[in-house]
Length: 142
Ligand SMILES: [Zn+2]
Ligand SMILES: [Zn+2]
Picture 1 (cartoon, rainbow, N blue to C red):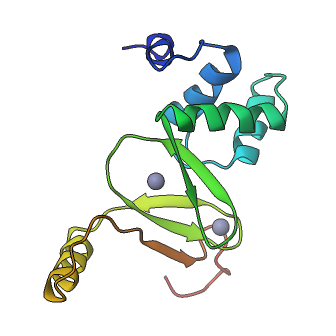
Picture 2: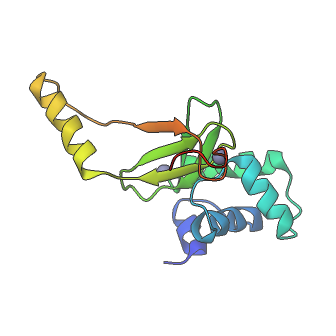
């Protein structure tokens, strides 16, 4: 299904800002972007869209279940295409970069901890905070 049909299906018109935001989130170099990141990308692509519009579009796409908003302790939120696939995040406390990972051993341990305490697990969110490769001081241990 193409993006235009997808938007129609959730009751949204396929406006240029909506299509461009989705294009960047789906096909850009990074899957997790803040509203400011998206705004910058749109300007680089010559789209004349204000930051307020970016926020409004993201809110609409989130409500429609196409985009998921993730907020972290660093106080900023990023958006990603909601593929309904569980994953956890690595968050850079300096530049705000967010990457994702999934580790079967961590997943299994969490399930085991919950079970051993008679706790019925419904979901979990795990975020690792630190410095990304680009922000680490040069020469620090790998
Ligand atoms: Zn960083
Ligand atoms: Zn993610």
